[in-house]
Image 1 (cartoon, rainbow, N blue to C red):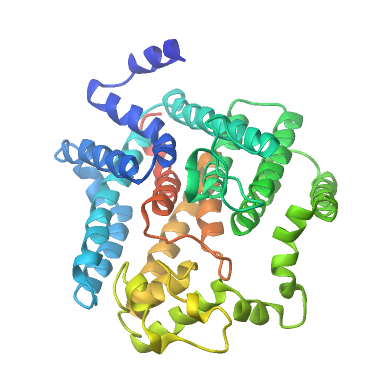
Image 2 (cartoon, rainbow, N blue to C red; image 1 turned 180 degrees about the vertical axis):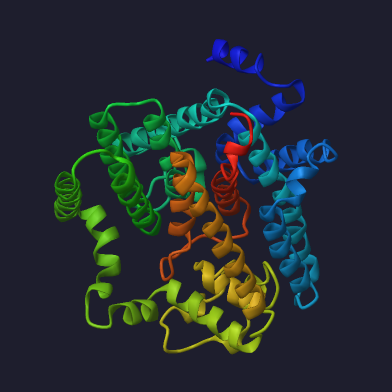
Amino acid sequence: MIDDLKNIFSKIENKDRSSLILISLFPLSLILGNLIINIFIILISINFISELKKNKIFLRDKIFFLLLFFLCSLIINLFFSTNLINSFPRVLKFAFVIFFILEIRRIILIYKKQIINFIFKTWSLIFLVLLADISVEIIFGKNIFGISANIDGRIASFFGDELVAGAFVHGITLFFLSYLIEKNTKNYFIILAIVSIIGISFLIGERSNFLKLFFSIILFGGLLIKINFLKKILLIGLIITSLITFINFNEEYKYRYFDQIKTLYTKNGVSKFLKVSEYGAHQNVAIKIFSEYPFFGVGVKNFRFESRQEKYENKDYEATKAKNSTHPHQTHLEFLSETGLIGYLSFIIFIFWSLLIAVKGYMQSRNPYQLSAIIFIISTLIPILPSGSFLSTFTSGIFWLNFSIMIGFINKRKFKS
């Protein structure tokens, strides 16, 4: 690995070495915590800003204008925020995120495949270490540092009380599989990796992230794994059958994946489930906040304050007393309640056009890393499924990293590679 790094360093400009290291280790920052994530984002963005004169070509890019459009919508939202002091830091951070995205795009565009693969190789090694640690906790009840989850049927790993291991696995898995494909790994090994990751994600116990990962892997594998269609269908059927069988014979996971959500399997199950769960109470409050502040919401990061008010209690929801939360656990409702219809439509326009440009770019490049990021972005924004707070440090860190890769490969053929 050290020799590999020396070889890579000999092929890039001195000023870009720090960016290469920071980008390569960014998944590690996601494990180390919010402070480290923010430091990485700021340092990577500063690397772009420090060479702004040379990088001005990227400021004429349509991607930059899309990012600027979304930033402007957040700035406008500040004028209508019910707590400006609370909202301002997150909006300011997005300004740094823009340059973070552009710096990753710049590195991808100007350097050869060997150097870009080094980044994904490093991400894959970090990913494998995490999977190994998760496996240790699954088997022995504690990870290598003696950490265990405080909820039955959940896995903590290096994240401790945060319980976001499933979100991390969802965010990095497809890049790992893409790296295997780029290295011309045998199909049977890739399929083994897919089955293992699905199994580990299931055992982590984060239901929503498992469903998103399962959707992502199936779509990714369907498009890129070179086996015939019938074998793909049989493999999917075998995986689903194995998971159902496991649930039936394991009381802990049966409770987690069936008993806790069995209402969903009845007539009008979704509506019934929401009325008996905290998720439902949170989402009901978000809808009420949106109806009260329909155009601009209450401001970024202000759901946590607004949701405390008694006027949002709804006795039709059993968990209405637990309605207060940092976010409504659903990305679309988070934007509607905090940024209103104006902010939500701005976000949808931004994402839609970004995806449209990226898909068009993928049709030309057929780059698996880009496809991985496109699928992740789509899976993250699936309606109904619960989610983390979109603009929180950890969740947004994974999202913007994927977004950077998604738009990073656009027009790469126009640059030397």
